[in-house]
Amino acid sequence: MTSLTTCADAEATAQRAATEISRRLQSAIREREVAHLALSGGTTPSRTYELLAGEVADWSKIEVWFADERCVGPEDPESNYRLARETLLDTASGLDGARVHRMEGELGPEQGAEHYAQALQAHAPIEEAVAVLDVIVLGIGPDGHVASLFPGAPTLEVEDALCLGVHDSPKPPPERITLSLPVLRAARRCVLLATGAGKADAVDAMLGEPSRHVPASLLLRERLSVVVDDAASPEPPRT
Image (cartoon, rainbow, N blue to C red):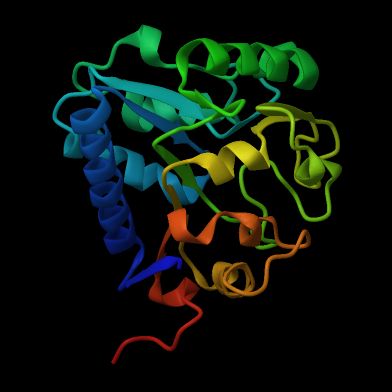
């Protein structure tokens, strides 16, 4: 069953998410001596990353991955890596740069996806040919997309790849790299964040019947934590 937490506002949502992510990373380190965390881009997770940098006291045993990336260079304003670096990576105490696995968007969709799949195979736990990450942080688009898996896209049908190239994203830029749906579903926990009234319909649809028209609805429910503010909640606001 999906865990749904509703917070008063965007700041409370970010704090709740940072606490949840930190707790799960620390649990992974206790159990396996390493934690694997994947980050997404977008405005919603950025404040969570700022808080998470201080929430985790020691990042030396954490491997950082990315859920998706636009096919741009690492210094481009649209780069998910750049967002993560500015909000989290530059201030995370003890984080070894060799443990930050950037999607090389500048290589283009296919080569970038191939390189990232190789990195996952080399450095992430693999079970039954699928990378198993401890925590994947996700946003959700108004259309219900997660990472760069969009409604009705053929990438949703791919079951034998860790990472995929995207050529026709309905959101610019059209070329992207994304973790595959099997990798998202294999994660020990996905933490999905949503704030603002513009996301309420998407969150409601995500919690409904699984559908290729709402990619977020295809995530594994028993491993999914959804943290939203009142405006994005599909439930009536608290009184």
